[in-house]
Image (tube, rainbow, N blue to C red; front, side, top):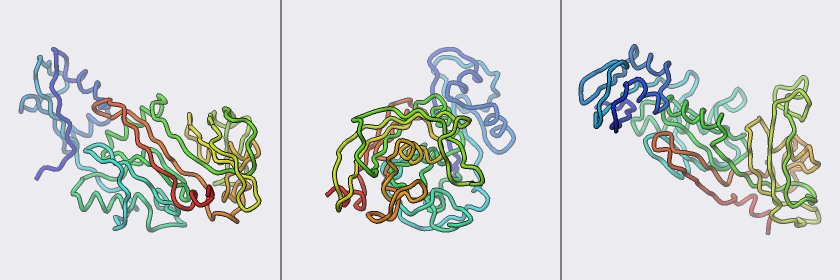
Length: 297
C-alpha cells in the first residue's frame, strides 16, 4: 500500500506546473526532496517535471517522500484528546503536566512521543510537526501538522499573523483595567536558559487581555482573564502578566504562588487558522480543565 502523503488537485486554466505547485505552497526544498528522495509528480497519470504546461481540467497528483521519525523521538502509547483530524492536521486538547516534546528532564510521556505512537499505529509515514507548542504545565488546544510540507504552510501562516490563539488565565490580584494591550519586548534573563523578562533589546511581543471576572478565592483577590496572542514569544503571557503586576496563579517562576493550584493557571481555549489546502477558516474551542474551574467556584 502506498501511504505517502499525497495532494491531488485539478487546474482550472492553462498554467506552468511550477506555478500551480507554488500556489499550494510547495517550496523549492520540497520539490528537490520529491525529485531525489522518493516522491513523484504526475499529470493525468503521467510523471512530469515542473516546466510542463498544464491545460484546463488537468489533474495533478503530488506524492511526497516518506518521512523518518525525528532522532530521539521514541513512539509511545498514551491518551490523546483529539478535537479534530484530517489528512493534514491533528488538533489536540493537551493535558497539563505533559511536555510538548521530550527534554533532558522529561524524556518520556511527551505529547510528541504519544502522537508518534499514534501515527505509527495509523500507518502515517510522518514525524511529528508541532505548529504551536505549549509549556509543560499549560493545557489546551495544540495543532500538529501531519507532514513537513503542511508544517511549512502553517509556519507561513504564523509569520503572516493568520493563526490566532486565545487563552484564559487566572492571575493574582484584581486587574484594574477591563481590557488593554501589553506591547513590551521579551528577552532572556541573563544567566538563565529558561526564564524570560521584558527588556528593551528583546523581541517584539504583543498580548491583548480582557477581564472576565474579578473574585476572591480563600481570602485572596484573583482575576479571570481572556488573552489573545499576536506574537508567539516563549512564556509570553506569563512574562507580560508579571510585567503589569499580576503573575499567573501557580506560576512560581514568575512570582505566582502555588497554594491554590500546582501549575500556572493557563489554558488555550481557542485556536483559529486557515486550512493549509482548502484555505477554509477553522476554529476550535475548549473549556477550562477541572483544576482551573475549581478556582472559580
